[in-house]
Amino acid sequence: MYPPAELTQERKLSDAHKKLDRKLARIRSGDYRPADFIIADAKDGDMGGGAAAPGPVLNEDGGPSGRMKPAAAYRDAMKEMTVSGLADIMLMSLSSAEALVAENAFDGHDITPAVRLNDTTDIWGFRGASYRDHAARPFRTARLDRAGAVCDLGLYAVTFYNDLDHDVAALEAYAAFREEASDAGMRHFLEVFNPAFDIDTGDTDLGTYVNDAIIRCLAGVATPERPLFLKMQYNGARAMEELAAYDPANLVVGILGGSAGTTRDTFELVGQAARFGARVALFGRKIYFADDSLEIVRCMRRVVEAELSPMEAVKVYHDHLQKTGCKASRTLEADIEVTESVLKAEAE
Figure 1 (cartoon, rainbow, N blue to C red):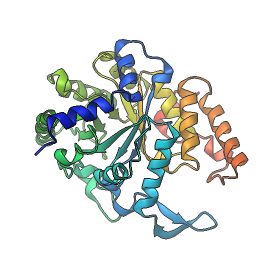
Figure 2 (figure 1 turned 30 degrees about the horizontal axis):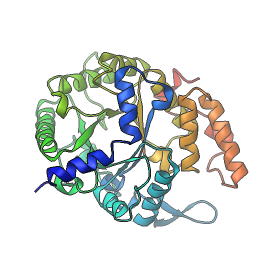
Figure 3 (figure 1 turned 180 degrees about the vertical axis):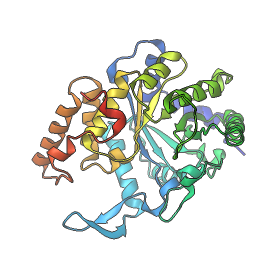
Figure 4 (figure 1 turned 45 degrees about the horizontal axis):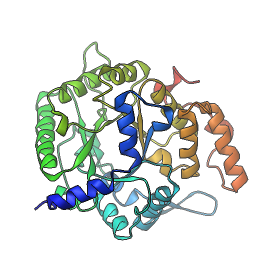
């Protein structure tokens, strides 16, 4: 049974002040300003990576010890980001969300908690697993009635393969989810992954294929069931600009972070995406595995607001690490390099 309607309404009213809702309203109205850029801290890695999600315990020399941090360390990082006020959304597994809500971790903080509401097999990347070698199968662990007890926002993910059977199954599962979410009063944002392996799209590049797949998927979805925004891979400037300009009042585009990469990669990604129309960034490893998670988000905002170029932001970030006595995992020379090929063409 879902939460009573009055409780759902009460939760929504209590969340009405959240930065997320204010920013989305301005973005959709055409009154966007760089300060409205939305940043989500994605700490739902246990839904795909299992016990390895919190990362390795490091030796004194900074090398891995062979042991993994416990869930408490992962959740401490969630609480630290929440208190900082730097993020607009905290994305978690339902188990982490329950733990933090039980501690009143979000009380008094202008951040929106969210949970991952499906865990298709292409995110099952735990140690020894080979599921990502295969096309994703729809799967959901979290129940909406349980999720609704701690938040009213969640993530739903799909992947398109240009394969009739797989794509129809994914779309049918998404339609069933939307109906259930609508009944439960659960809002959602939609994550669209690139396939983990090469697919045949003929003479069409992958970014164009993904754009068309997204628009086709959502064209028949009524406003009450539409996602608040997208979370997708950055497929280059042209693809981002096309999708972001298609229907900006109804489709807010966001990017996912992917692998940790260099600090320059992080700042180039958020800077380029914002420049070509993205209004949301949902980063997991790029934040959590940074030498200073809070400072990297501060610098991300300064890049989006054109206060710093991506290269300048790397230098400011390293200067901060030095001043605070935090040992950098890379030299400045290594960290200032752009290593992700999709970013190189537009690197500042």
